[in-house]
Length: 217
Image (cartoon, rainbow, N blue to C red; front, side):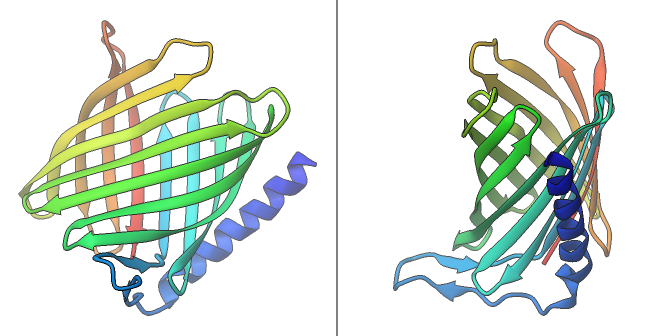
């Protein structure tokens, strides 16, 4: 069953990624007279962590909504987790918005419900962004989890280079929190942004490098 899910999700990610940038940018729609706007988003996000994990996500806009498909792979154990969900991005003011995504994940320990919150604040030359994830087990041996992966604070030193700090903190039921932090460097190109993070555990000299590519419109 899990391999069928992986295959379907892999196809979905490829389709979303290939078609995401073939559409015109979405036009924000004011929500109910309130001081915010909803919009869908086309995006691609790929990450590789040197300690042994890789992930790819694709999102395609449908009006004010975004359909999201992803695949997370543990390279060492070849464990694969397909993810499928939907959400939107809420814009509060220029440079301040938050993405919200509700998704289901099929892990090797059972099904999970996931809620992603992606706040972002930009006031040049400074920027702050985060990805917070809450995981609720639906069945099997999966456990409740909460993560901030990552929280980044950066400053544009000179276009197209941005430097800053990246923080990762992960909480799993029954276990101690796992905290890592380190520098981040990002270079923006015409097709997207390439980032490097050097994450270090407190009291350790080992650096766990993570390379990311992201593009959205």
